[in-house]
Length: 227
Image (cartoon, rainbow, N blue to C red):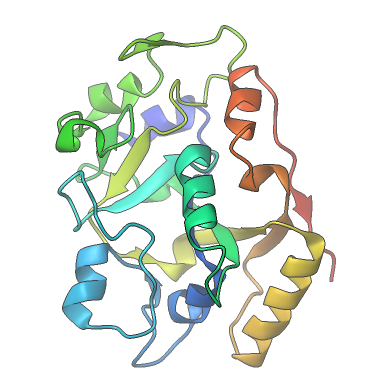
Protein backbone atom coordinates (compact mmCIF):
# COMPACT_ATOMS: atom_id res chain seq x y z
CA UNK A 1 0.00 0.00 0.00
CA UNK A 2 1.71 3.13 -1.28
CA UNK A 3 1.36 6.34 0.76
CA UNK A 4 1.40 8.27 -2.52
CA UNK A 5 -2.04 6.84 -3.34
CA UNK A 6 -3.38 8.13 -0.03
CA UNK A 7 -1.81 11.53 -0.68
CA UNK A 8 -3.18 11.77 -4.23
CA UNK A 9 -6.66 10.93 -2.96
CA UNK A 10 -6.46 13.95 -0.68
CA UNK A 11 -6.88 12.12 2.61
CA UNK A 12 -6.06 14.53 5.44
CA UNK A 13 -7.15 12.54 8.49
CA UNK A 14 -8.57 9.32 9.85
CA UNK A 15 -11.13 9.29 12.67
CA UNK A 16 -11.71 7.13 15.72
CA UNK A 17 -14.41 7.91 18.27
CA UNK A 18 -14.35 6.89 21.91
CA UNK A 19 -15.59 8.03 25.29
CA UNK A 20 -13.71 11.09 26.46
CA UNK A 21 -13.08 9.31 29.77
CA UNK A 22 -10.60 7.14 27.82
CA UNK A 23 -8.42 10.10 26.87
CA UNK A 24 -6.09 10.08 29.91
CA UNK A 25 -5.23 6.46 29.14
CA UNK A 26 -4.76 7.11 25.42
CA UNK A 27 -2.71 10.29 25.77
CA UNK A 28 -1.01 9.78 29.12
CA UNK A 29 2.23 8.31 30.36
CA UNK A 30 2.50 5.51 32.91
CA UNK A 31 1.91 1.85 33.64
CA UNK A 32 -1.88 2.04 33.32
CA UNK A 33 -1.95 4.24 30.22
CA UNK A 34 -2.23 2.82 26.73
CA UNK A 35 -0.01 5.54 25.25
CA UNK A 36 -2.07 5.50 22.10
CA UNK A 37 -5.07 3.70 20.66
CA UNK A 38 -5.14 -0.07 21.09
CA UNK A 39 -7.47 -2.75 19.75
CA UNK A 40 -10.30 -4.49 21.60
CA UNK A 41 -8.17 -7.62 21.77
CA UNK A 42 -5.25 -5.73 23.29
CA UNK A 43 -7.55 -4.14 25.87
CA UNK A 44 -8.95 -7.52 26.86
CA UNK A 45 -5.54 -9.19 26.91
CA UNK A 46 -4.18 -6.47 29.16
CA UNK A 47 -7.18 -6.74 31.50
CA UNK A 48 -7.20 -2.96 31.61
CA UNK A 49 -9.86 -1.81 34.06
CA UNK A 50 -10.13 1.71 32.73
CA UNK A 51 -10.60 1.67 28.96
CA UNK A 52 -14.20 1.41 27.74
CA UNK A 53 -14.86 -0.58 24.55
CA UNK A 54 -17.02 1.05 21.85
CA UNK A 55 -18.11 -2.26 20.34
CA UNK A 56 -18.10 -5.31 22.60
CA UNK A 57 -19.44 -7.63 19.88
CA UNK A 58 -17.14 -6.98 16.88
CA UNK A 59 -19.24 -8.89 14.36
CA UNK A 60 -16.42 -8.49 11.84
CA UNK A 61 -14.57 -11.17 13.86
CA UNK A 62 -11.42 -9.02 13.84
CA UNK A 63 -11.01 -7.71 17.42
CA UNK A 64 -7.26 -7.30 16.82
CA UNK A 65 -7.94 -4.47 14.34
CA UNK A 66 -8.59 -0.83 15.28
CA UNK A 67 -11.60 0.64 13.46
CA UNK A 68 -11.07 3.99 11.75
CA UNK A 69 -13.01 6.03 9.23
CA UNK A 70 -11.86 8.46 6.54
CA UNK A 71 -12.19 12.25 7.01
CA UNK A 72 -15.34 11.98 9.18
CA UNK A 73 -16.66 9.56 11.80
CA UNK A 74 -19.06 6.75 10.93
CA UNK A 75 -22.06 8.91 11.81
CA UNK A 76 -24.54 6.02 11.94
CA UNK A 77 -22.60 3.87 14.39
CA UNK A 78 -21.40 6.93 16.32
CA UNK A 79 -24.93 8.17 17.08
CA UNK A 80 -26.01 4.63 17.93
CA UNK A 81 -23.13 4.35 20.41
CA UNK A 82 -23.99 7.72 21.96
CA UNK A 83 -27.65 6.77 22.37
CA UNK A 84 -26.79 3.41 23.90
CA UNK A 85 -24.63 5.04 26.56
CA UNK A 86 -26.62 8.21 27.25
CA UNK A 87 -27.84 6.96 30.65
CA UNK A 88 -24.39 5.93 31.84
CA UNK A 89 -22.38 8.04 34.27
CA UNK A 90 -19.57 8.75 31.80
CA UNK A 91 -21.42 9.62 28.60
CA UNK A 92 -19.27 12.25 26.88
CA UNK A 93 -17.54 11.41 23.61
CA UNK A 94 -14.64 12.59 21.50
CA UNK A 95 -13.48 12.02 17.93
CA UNK A 96 -9.73 11.51 17.64
CA UNK A 97 -8.14 12.78 14.44
CA UNK A 98 -5.27 10.59 13.27
CA UNK A 99 -2.59 11.16 10.67
CA UNK A 100 -3.18 9.09 7.50
CA UNK A 101 0.55 8.31 7.56
CA UNK A 102 -0.30 5.24 9.67
CA UNK A 103 -1.65 3.53 6.53
CA UNK A 104 0.81 0.91 5.29
CA UNK A 105 1.05 -2.55 3.70
CA UNK A 106 -0.51 -4.17 6.77
CA UNK A 107 -3.58 -1.92 6.85
CA UNK A 108 -6.97 -3.39 5.99
CA UNK A 109 -9.84 -1.64 4.23
CA UNK A 110 -13.57 -2.23 3.92
CA UNK A 111 -15.90 -0.25 1.60
CA UNK A 112 -18.84 -0.83 3.97
CA UNK A 113 -19.20 -1.41 7.69
CA UNK A 114 -16.67 -4.14 8.46
CA UNK A 115 -19.31 -6.12 10.38
CA UNK A 116 -21.35 -6.64 7.20
CA UNK A 117 -21.43 -10.35 6.32
CA UNK A 118 -19.11 -11.06 9.25
CA UNK A 119 -16.13 -9.25 7.77
CA UNK A 120 -16.36 -10.75 4.28
CA UNK A 121 -15.57 -7.43 2.57
CA UNK A 122 -12.34 -6.67 4.45
CA UNK A 123 -9.10 -6.76 2.48
CA UNK A 124 -5.63 -5.28 2.00
CA UNK A 125 -3.84 -3.35 -0.73
CA UNK A 126 -4.20 -0.33 -2.99
CA UNK A 127 -7.08 -1.80 -4.99
CA UNK A 128 -9.05 -2.46 -1.82
CA UNK A 129 -8.35 1.08 -0.64
CA UNK A 130 -9.70 2.51 -3.90
CA UNK A 131 -12.89 0.43 -3.52
CA UNK A 132 -13.88 2.83 -0.75
CA UNK A 133 -14.46 5.45 -3.46
CA UNK A 134 -16.17 3.32 -6.13
CA UNK A 135 -19.13 4.81 -7.99
CA UNK A 136 -21.23 1.93 -6.65
CA UNK A 137 -20.67 0.12 -3.35
CA UNK A 138 -22.94 -2.85 -2.70
CA UNK A 139 -26.00 -1.14 -4.15
CA UNK A 140 -25.19 2.37 -2.90
CA UNK A 141 -24.47 4.81 -5.73
CA UNK A 142 -21.92 7.55 -5.18
CA UNK A 143 -23.35 11.06 -5.34
CA UNK A 144 -21.78 13.21 -8.05
CA UNK A 145 -21.55 15.99 -5.45
CA UNK A 146 -19.28 14.07 -3.08
CA UNK A 147 -15.77 15.34 -2.55
CA UNK A 148 -13.14 12.95 -3.96
CA UNK A 149 -11.61 12.13 -0.56
CA UNK A 150 -14.94 11.04 0.99
CA UNK A 151 -15.79 7.31 0.84
CA UNK A 152 -18.97 6.42 -1.02
CA UNK A 153 -20.39 4.73 2.09
CA UNK A 154 -19.96 6.72 5.30
CA UNK A 155 -19.53 3.44 7.18
CA UNK A 156 -16.45 2.44 5.14
CA UNK A 157 -13.52 1.52 7.35
CA UNK A 158 -9.76 1.60 7.59
CA UNK A 159 -8.61 -1.11 10.00
CA UNK A 160 -5.21 -0.83 11.63
CA UNK A 161 -3.55 -3.96 13.06
CA UNK A 162 -1.08 -1.96 15.11
CA UNK A 163 -1.28 0.14 18.21
CA UNK A 164 -1.65 3.72 17.02
CA UNK A 165 0.93 5.79 18.93
CA UNK A 166 -0.24 9.02 20.48
CA UNK A 167 2.15 11.08 18.33
CA UNK A 168 -0.02 10.09 15.34
CA UNK A 169 -3.07 11.67 16.99
CA UNK A 170 -3.27 15.17 15.52
CA UNK A 171 -6.50 16.51 16.98
CA UNK A 172 -9.54 16.05 19.19
CA UNK A 173 -13.13 16.97 18.29
CA UNK A 174 -15.75 17.57 20.98
CA UNK A 175 -19.47 18.22 20.58
CA UNK A 176 -19.49 21.78 21.94
CA UNK A 177 -17.23 24.63 22.99
CA UNK A 178 -18.14 24.01 26.63
CA UNK A 179 -17.25 20.33 26.45
CA UNK A 180 -13.97 21.16 24.73
CA UNK A 181 -13.03 23.62 27.48
CA UNK A 182 -14.06 21.22 30.25
CA UNK A 183 -12.16 18.29 28.73
CA UNK A 184 -9.01 20.35 28.17
CA UNK A 185 -9.10 21.39 31.83
CA UNK A 186 -9.49 17.76 32.95
CA UNK A 187 -6.64 16.62 30.74
CA UNK A 188 -4.35 19.35 32.02
CA UNK A 189 -5.20 18.33 35.60
CA UNK A 190 -4.11 14.81 34.57
CA UNK A 191 -0.85 16.36 33.33
CA UNK A 192 -1.59 15.43 29.72
CA UNK A 193 0.55 17.27 27.18
CA UNK A 194 -1.73 18.92 24.60
CA UNK A 195 0.80 21.18 22.89
CA UNK A 196 0.89 19.17 19.66
CA UNK A 197 -2.87 18.59 19.46
CA UNK A 198 -5.48 20.74 17.76
CA UNK A 199 -8.63 21.01 19.88
CA UNK A 200 -11.89 21.44 17.96
CA UNK A 201 -15.61 21.37 18.54
CA UNK A 202 -18.54 20.76 16.20
CA UNK A 203 -22.14 19.82 16.91
CA UNK A 204 -22.52 18.48 13.35
CA UNK A 205 -19.81 15.86 13.86
CA UNK A 206 -22.00 14.15 16.44
CA UNK A 207 -25.19 13.85 14.36
CA UNK A 208 -26.30 10.97 12.13
CA UNK A 209 -27.84 13.28 9.51
CA UNK A 210 -24.40 14.72 8.78
CA UNK A 211 -23.74 11.58 6.72
CA UNK A 212 -26.28 12.84 4.19
CA UNK A 213 -24.72 16.31 4.22
CA UNK A 214 -21.30 15.03 3.18
CA UNK A 215 -22.94 12.90 0.48
CA UNK A 216 -24.09 16.19 -1.04
CA UNK A 217 -20.60 17.65 -0.95
CA UNK A 218 -20.93 19.71 2.22
CA UNK A 219 -17.82 20.31 4.32
CA UNK A 220 -18.58 20.03 8.04
CA UNK A 221 -16.71 22.88 9.65
CA UNK A 222 -14.52 22.37 12.70
CA UNK A 223 -14.17 25.24 15.16
CA UNK A 224 -10.79 25.45 16.83
CA UNK A 225 -10.77 26.13 20.55
CA UNK A 226 -8.87 29.28 21.37
CA UNK A 227 -6.43 29.35 24.25
